[in-house]
Length: 259
Ligand SMILES: Nc1ncnc2c1ncn2[C@@H]1O[C@H](COP(=O)(O)OP(=O)(O)OP(=O)(O)O)[C@@H](O)[C@H]1O
Ligand SMILES: [Mg+2]
Image 1 (cartoon, protein in one colour):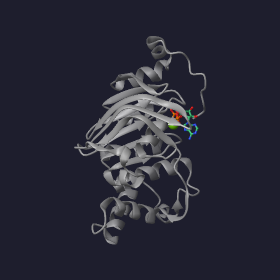
Image 2 (cartoon, protein in one colour):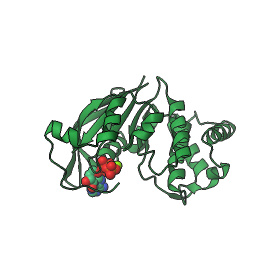
Image 3 (cartoon, helix red, strand yellow):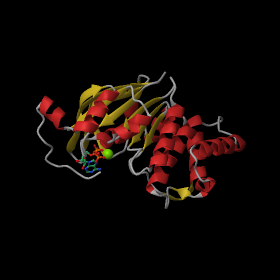
Image 4 (cartoon, helix red, strand yellow):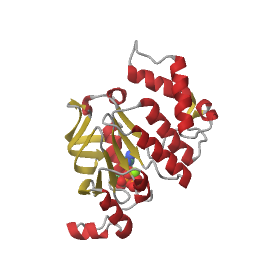
């Protein structure tokens, strides 16, 4: 069973400290949700875990099954079993979705263990059907011209194809229509097992009606300031964040930004 452990994580972007001591442990079999106001560092946390070069870890540690993630290159992190669905997935012109997926799977499996073309196609067909995706999507350039919702669904296709140990899904529900939200949730629920841990970043309780999280955390001003069960997400949906700010004596953010 995989364990992602984050201890006292401090992260700066261009000299400005964004994360100010994040502690979190995600184990295989668990689903965690992180909620929190805009600009509080949720995406920064996912970028730091995946090793985005702009995000400098100034203090603290990230380990996966005891291995130091901070010492790994980005591709090593993916090979070790970490996966990130980005809030804004990148478009890659000239690389088809299918080619990208096959290369990513083979990178994960390592030399000598590559997936056969037949097996790959069978798996791809099966997962695309499960996610009710148009088969043409496999042959289009990665994310190029994909609608917002198609990009999100495609991230779940990647998740199901790559079968990571720990996945971080950053606003996987944003821009999804009601049916797509159900399909994306179905995909995540299908992945649920003791071999899979998941960190879902979301603004809305809505997604959590379909995927019941084991833990809900609230991030504010670069820290996890409160943790609880699904009832915490329900209270946030009903009451917003003011009560937490009051409870903790947190001043309002000076800079807020749009999602
Ligand atoms: N590459 C960057 N360059 C400059 N500032 C950045 C960069 N990445 C993040 N920041 C800043 O760090 C803060 C946290 O941003 P982050 O994207 O982590 O917030 P978030 O919690 O994901 O917000 P949202 O809910 O709006 O997605 C913001 O003030 C943002 O402007
Ligand atoms: Mg974000």
